[in-house]
Image 1 (tube, rainbow over the protein chains, first blue to last red):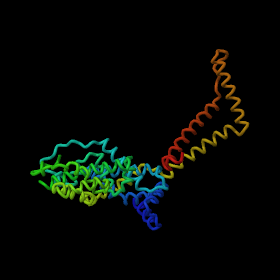
Image 2 (cartoon, one colour; image 1 turned 180 degrees about the vertical axis):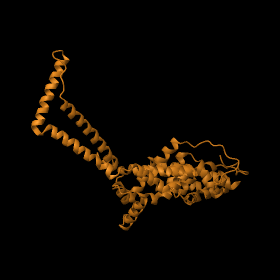
Image 3 (cartoon, one colour; image 1 turned 45 degrees about the vertical axis):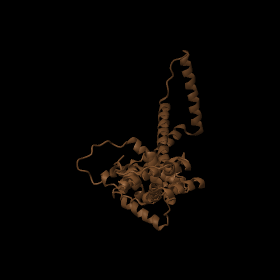
Image 4 (cartoon, chains in turn yellow, green; image 1 turned 60 degrees about the horizontal axis):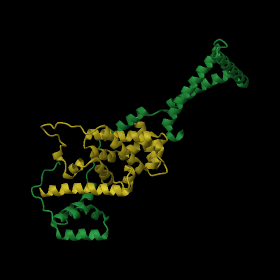
Amino acid sequence: MLQEWTASALRLHRAGVTEPHELARAARGGDLGAFETLVRRYQRRVYGFAYQFLRDPDEAQDLAQEVFVRLYRNLGRFDVERPFEPWFWRLAANVAATYRRRRPAPTVELPLTAPAASREDQLPLEQALTDLSEDLRLPVLLHYYVDLPLDQVAAAMGLSLSAVKSRLHRARAVLRRVLVDEEER
Amino acid sequence: MPMGAPRERSVLRPGCVEARAQLEALVDGDLPEAQAGAVRAHLADCAACRAHHREACSLPRRLHAIPPPEPSPDLVPGVLARVRAERIGPLQLWSPLAVELVLFTTVVWYLSGPRGLARLVQRAASDMGALAGWGVGLSALPTVPPGDVFLLLVSGLLVVVTLYHLSLLAARLGPGLL
């Protein structure tokens, strides 16, 4: 079955169906090859977003899967006349927020021997990003990490443009202070 | 805070707090010119705030440059396996149609066209009248012909199968269908 889908994805590529909204339209019509192409195209960004949001590889994998499964379930709601990315990232942001609410960060005892990805191994910026509150981290990730324009971040988060700018300024101020402190150490 | 306390903190001078609070807006060009000029004047005179300004300027680029981690090779197969498990195939989607046709044919055959339908209405009216009579104590509880019970069961089954089929179609073709 998986091989069959890959062949279908290749067929779409040869037919010139490569734009995300075209793939979403085809996937909405039941073309699993188109859906697979969409997943492959966005897997890196979605996983990166999930990882920066949760800072746990296993949880990030789980969240990324959940985003794509929810994409599949909601394809019927996608308006093919509109661009795919704002709609998709709004969905991803909602799934991430819901995921975090349902699975709050566990309080774990740190082992005596630190694992490979311990806090000390993180770069200062990534570590500071991890410490941001969720309402500040989400716009930072969507704008600077996923590369969404500000208006799309606002649409994805259901906020006004000025509210998104305000959150980004606050988030960057927090990060900046941490980085300056780090340099002065 | 994850970071330890700095060994040597720069001393805040008058205007530092106000200037630092506006650095991000200054970098993004969101400050009105008068305020931007005041912040720039402070920066020209304050080395500590210039360090903050340097960080503020470099931060967007550094955030963009955070390397994305490599997703596990299991991600795509995992998603496809979950979707495949949820997917409604053509056989599952259209097989209720055969059952619906059989049930519908049975109902039509039973009613046998307009005469059958008229007979059914007549019988139903008669049953209702008898039930009403039983309700006010004028007559005994009427007996329902077995054929009517059969028709009722088949019709109920047809409704259930049709609702199930519609739910499959809605899930497969999206909410715009219904």
